[in-house]
Image 1 (cartoon, rainbow, N blue to C red):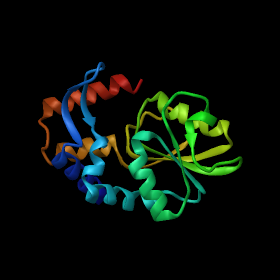
Image 2: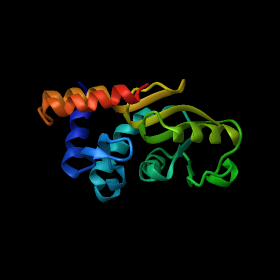
Image 3: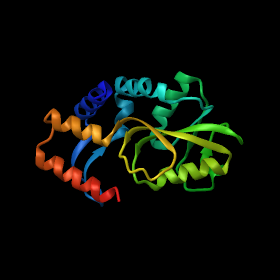
Image 4: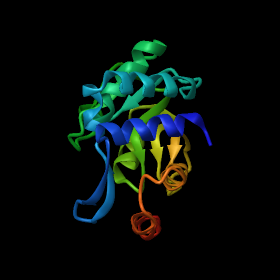
Length: 187
């Protein structure tokens, strides 16, 4: 198992970025509270350092409002211009902020790749203004595979659950609840 998995999960649990319980209308048995990242600059820097090699050969980064701390950090570290969505659900020319024009290969920076309309909306918006999303950079990949775009993630949900099981962070019944919830939501 990749060393990054243990580093990330331990940091997420210690800080409360990864929480277990029952959350939201779909009763998710866990959640990632990535809004806390700016409060933990060491973890934010670790994520940026680990994501940097995954950026690849693109000349634009695109992020959502939620991933701006990571997007800005990656942009500063790589020198690649950042475009971000304001999340206002308006036409791309009113929603996307930054220097972009037709023909730029871009990486979409997100926290979690899940069965999420936000990813599809961001990809469509980017294409609408000429940005070609080459790949997705995610902290966590829930392995739904709803998109044909390549995903480069720091950790997959399978790796995370294996780590939690092997290191006895959760009891078997709670892991089973998470696995059932995931299989139900993965389609």
